Length: 562
Image (tube, rainbow, N blue to C red; front, top):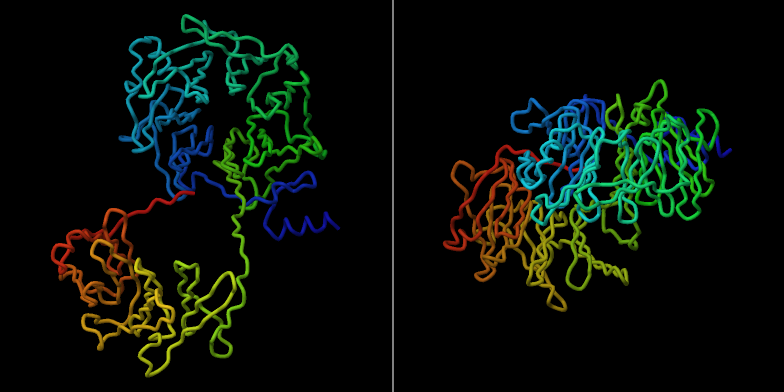
């Protein structure tokens, strides 16, 4: 029965991937494929990271891409502004100065993450270390920042350590003494130091006098599995060090001094999907993810086994589009899997909002009508004010769940002006402003024990020329409130208790709507209209109370981050 339910759940959800093990770990994820069709420069991905500004950087065999969740900014040898030394990018790393280190087949590049522009390597200084010039032009496989800020760079057969000062310049330069007999294939930080996979051994790396690096076996208990055993990746996991290789996955117990090998099988449960391990990473909730050239694996700590997913013959958006996974990046619980021929496969968890029911509001609506909530705000005492379409205004105490209803009463000068509430605003004087669609504005002084509404409507209040109010924002500089209407801006002066229409230039004074208003921390009023976006200088309005300076954006682009 359980397997039947699992099968139905997978099919109904569109998850056409193979699932091994009963925990169904990967069934919790949604899948998104980021490929050349999306704008990626190449489908062969070698590295993925997220910078401190929230951008995703994707290294490929034909350039580097900065991804904001919607669009790509491409870096490469032929780009006039965003130029790199080489297009085959292997390594990405952000340092403490918010610079991106980019390692490629042609050397190192630096990118200023605040501007996105490439930086000259002269910014690193390094005049005291002539050998740096050879590093900058070397084949770079990996770049890692240690917890102390040191930058470790792995080239084809050399290992470098750069110490950086607070200004980001190189203050110390160490390198492996001579070229090693075997290439350095993996590095990771361990107990404040660095260990590296070199050939078929794992070594401690130590700084020595004379600006040299020396290696020492991490443990005699880590015995090479075979002569052709090559270490591809390392991952610290508590008291364990996971070692990925071309001959499978190994776990070294640093306390027990024991080494265990995990086997693979394409059909037996509990085993890895393949022996060639390409990367190992941990999610924020402690799950160990292992990539191979034949699928993606997750470790089950309770059973000491693995489950995996692989691409099937006819995949869709519900699964992997490639089995050949070369690198991993973990962002919380999200998994970014860089593949050799399918771009990036993003596995992300569904975001859920915890919702609790807040009592039963006795809606005053016509029979058969459901409540349409148009606005919600909270006053100083914690009461919630809920505006509705056709249902009027409700006040609710979230603790006692007591509800009070305010409805339009014809010929009543102290009731709300309309049951069609468009928006709510509580100002600094603790006045509630209820603006409506077609009936003007109702004001309620919440400082009074038994407040009644003060009505402001077109034809009865001078200066208020429109009863269709769409937006509102308080202006502390001019001690008033701005209202957006279907025909323009209206300012309410609290001191004089009067409304005044304030026009833009004659060419842009008439709008179909002013749908949104916002005052920022710099004293500017942002005005969203049917004719574009305008920014009003509120200090300029303070000088005359009749005119203001403004700028407009009729066409602009937004950047959205994933």
